[in-house]
Image (cartoon, rainbow, N blue to C red; front, side, top):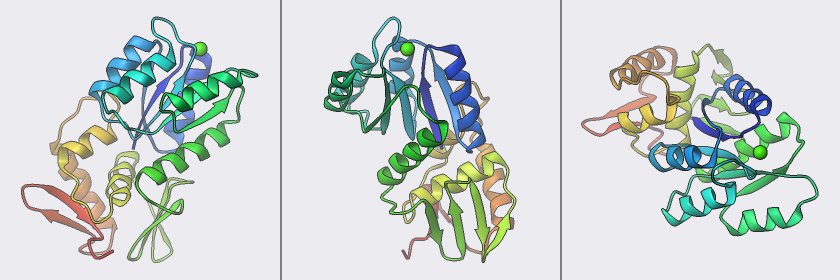
Length: 220
Ligand code: CA
């Protein structure tokens, strides 16, 4: 899963970057509103962390523009302390949640998980597909209770497929959601990750839908 972090404070941006990488996400950074607006318009994100006080274009304007363009990814806004009307404006502009600075990284991660879960219609932070359990809180996967060792990219591919259980996910969608922007993307690598995942998961767990993509847990 892929997150866009929009934050002009370089220290906080790099803390967010590292915490999200550690949590298993692919992460893109934007340091001003215009760059953020562009990236959020052309790239596919599972969620956005958006600071409201930004150079070039403020965060509220960025958010309104996205929503006017029907970019509907979940957006968590970061607001200044004691500025309650910023929260109200942010929610009116289409934010899904907010956090007031300073915040605890654990709380930000929990709120992001909740947003992503809701956008995929999951009731819990543990996603279950047959014998496979994916724990989004710890970025871990188990089969029949046994931990499965996955690389970061294998985990992201599996998380996207399990987020969209029963639906066909195309190779292009997988590419868009597992790599950060500066990565050299190649859709052929998806087949490699799928092949490796199949060796680590129960037989038949990942179905190939010819010409369309991959699917998990159609029966659910
Ligand atoms: Ca700021």
